[in-house]
Image (tube, rainbow, N blue to C red; front, side, top):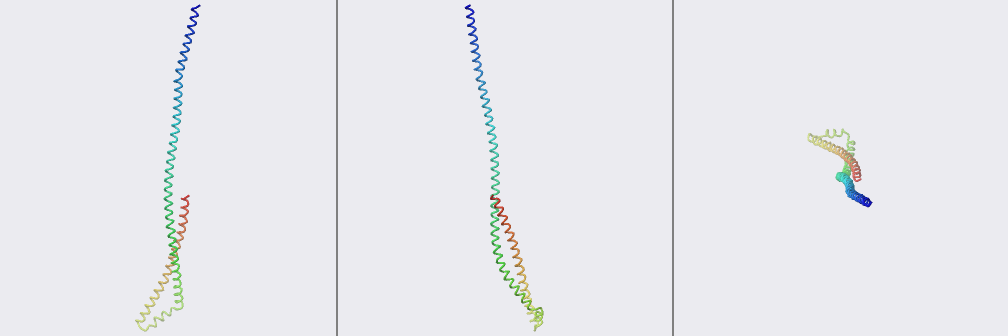
Length: 198
């Protein structure tokens, strides 16, 4: 009986030792699995963070490209705005010059018109037969030549007066057309400038 009791005690001790060994084995095996799981989770988090970093880098590249594009557009628009501003200044300056030229030409035209009207009145008052009478009344060939030359000078002078008046009117009309074009151009340039500034 004593031997059986010792056997039971030995068996109980063996079971206890075996249980203890299993417990130690499982705790020794569990830490590497726990570490493995932690390492795996850390790698997943690292990969997720790396994906986010890659995404942010890609967005940053897009933003930089957009900024460069906007800078190019801004430079182009600024250059166009300066060019438009220069053209506008030139057009306004030319319009002011043209206004002065038109005033002077209009004053000359008024003066020339008065001369033309006066000459037309003289011609109307002196019928054509007076020219013939003037030439026919010559006392000599020399007198005839002088009278003929005088009449030619009068005719040339009349032609100059009439041509001058005609040219002055054409010049004024050209200047008015140019002025209207400048007014339209200035209006267009101002609109372009406002659009580009906006």
